[in-house]
Image 1 (cartoon, helix red, strand yellow):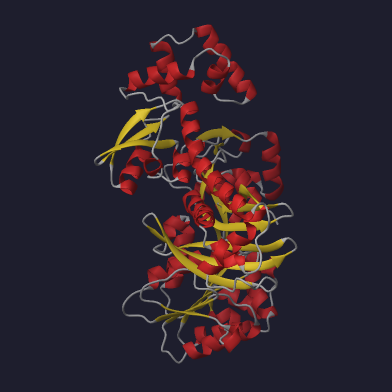
Image 2 (cartoon, rainbow, N blue to C red):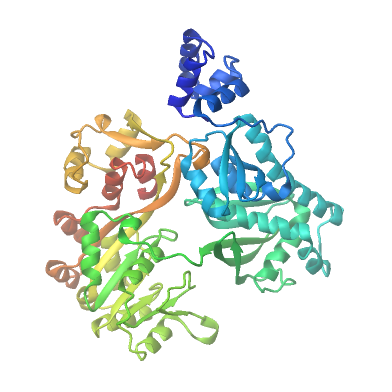
Length: 577
């Protein structure tokens, strides 16, 4: 789709329609909640090809018609299908070191630069119509359909079984289907791949920005060959169908090394596979990249400068706790300290850090591993998760004896964490004197920067916000926590400008792209130490912390919503209890 400014200029300059028809199309598009350009084309006011030919003339970019144009498979595949779809671009020809690209928006400099780096070729940009582009993009799906047809023909509609599994797993079409699923996941930015057998089909879903999305449905007769292929890659038993199996494999997709952590469990209609994507070369994020506001960031930085004590990160599964710990380790990882971690499993490899994975089969648990670590002269210890009293006690004793201990717990907010440790059987005075800081967190989706727009809350959203937050305090919240260059508009939430994503090709029409943390930080001071020793409840701790300046995850999220990082609806979704 063309940028609104470009579209209006081209319509006027080349007299494509008249003022009355443009006005009518604009009103209709707003009423039907559709794009202005789409309405112009669908109502026959403007011919799509004419519009894009004239836009090419105006932008001084040559036009290319892709309908019926033969594109060699090796050239088309220079840009993988998911990238082509996400960025609305197709490679249609190549001459020496020049790659010819067809785009509906030739002003998209970011995509052109991205493809220059990825392909190592010099892009020559042509403009084409969205209809032609859609037809060209369908060729990627046609390749996958060809592979599915070959598998179906080879199995004659029967489900592969027994000794044929290894043979089926090594057939080129099966390998291509698995490769396609993995590549799509990487380029879509998925964190997990779910392959789920149903009665008559095989469903593939990706978790993108924390939300599961169905991406393809495969015929039932590819199921066993596909599962066997993944088992072979993960070095698992292909003839074991009744017991859970866990494995791991690595592949290189384009320039990126990827590790896939594989979990297979038997379900009613076969075996379900979940693969977690781990970027091998990923560097720890900075606290700014994680989304810490200035105030909370200073508290974390002060806590990690202390030579001993505990830093606890808490939240439900999938809330980014491990990523936060890795980021803190990245800051602490200096040549003059010895860092040891015990994890389940090791998700990212960090150079210069001694990482161990628990193995309960041989008695190597969090607790036994911790005991061994203390004989390894560590300065800093990371314990993947405190799950039981024994691990909690050893971690706390390590923190008391001059070690900085980092770990995670499963609690809903920061104040609940301290009574939770006491409930595990750890004496309150040990909890009080060893804990430096508790970071509670959730992940919210970030607004897509390409379709972000300003808007005002309607009454329903404003009242929903009013149920969980005293909106009279919103002006003070923003004043205290927003950077100085942001303006605040008083306490009437319906008159405060927020942001949302309208949905575009780059974000899969969701309005969101990527995720960021929202945080609640509890710093343990002298008064809190006394309260914990006196068996204070989570509510008592929360009340004290709030009176002394702690901002909650909801408030942290509201500040980020005002900054345009995320949306109010997203903050309310993840902070609902």
